[in-house]
Length: 271
Ligand SMILES: NC(=O)c1ccc[n+]([C@@H]2O[C@H](COP(=O)([O-])OP(=O)(O)OC[C@H]3O[C@@H](n4cnc5c(N)ncnc54)[C@H](OP(=O)(O)O)[C@@H]3O)[C@@H](O)[C@H]2O)c1
Image 1 (cartoon, rainbow, N blue to C red):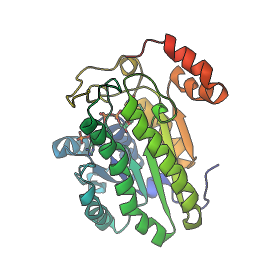
Image 2: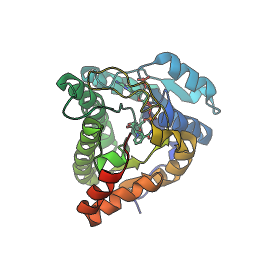
Image 3: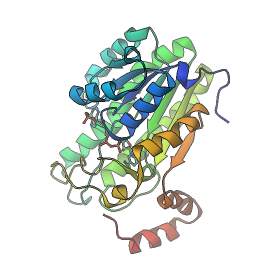
């Protein structure tokens, strides 16, 4: 059971998705378009957003493109105003855009650590703050954040990625408490491995693009399957949603016995 009752169905909503130019965000765009939702698609690469719009099977008049860079936090209030101006309202913000990391914690350059935090944490927070006055004024709204299993546990090579996702968990758990009185719902989504370019696009210790497909991702469910599992759960507006393979069990093992999870991870080949 979600937090609020009498909410708009997703199909009747204006849904704003970041990270819509590939992977999970792209797959969600197709599903929401088929459902008849009005869509606002954001990411940096406008050419890729155009491609996604063309491939949407619903009414193209119900898909608006709003390119943005999450690391340019100063621009995001203006972007929120533009998003609202398309249809006079936004009902759902899906904070999905993000980057990952492949670097040892001891070696990662501080500037690269800041860059990952800037996109994953500060960009997501700034965009959410930009839309919240609209949600609060209407006493209606839904904020979704695509975190990760790495928002709950830690493994090798992903220290800043995990830090950014843990930070999102804390910030949005607090926001949920503050938003009850405003009838604004908050959901944290924790995917396990999903077959996308997230690892390919991840950054190394010196900020270069890693450029290799993740071993976990290559064997994982497709973004389309992930989206199909996710959307019915979003309809229920649960506080947290976990979707993935056996790696999801790590979250529950850590809750029961952090020592046991450490022992398991020490023996696991992490790539
Ligand atoms: N795939 C997995 O196994 C997995 C697991 C757990 C969590 N997640 C999370 O799922 C979300 C989506 O990732 P994905 O797996 O679909 O990977 P992806 O295919 O690499 O997609 C990442 C998206 O984020 C956008 N993005 C990156 N930097 C941005 C910036 N500075 N400003 C605006 N948009 C930016 C990218 O678009 P542009 O490059 O066009 O800007 C792209 O659309 C991420 O938050 C990721 O952490 C993924």
